[in-house]
Length: 61
Image 1 (cartoon, rainbow, N blue to C red):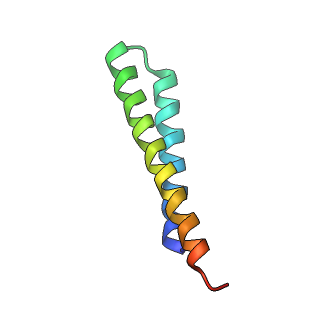
Image 2 (image 1 turned 45 degrees about the horizontal axis):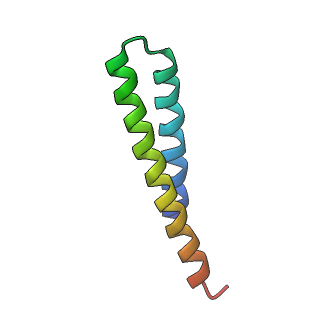
């Protein structure tokens, strides 16, 4: 569980960094690439949240 939570924290940090980069970018190609990467990371975060939820449900506590 600690690994999943740690990874979640990392992904949130990456989303924030890429969003900041995208907000400062000027070129359309770079903005598009950064937007795609943010979307990918957000999908990963959603899947990870599901994994965390399943781990909690499976816990005897």
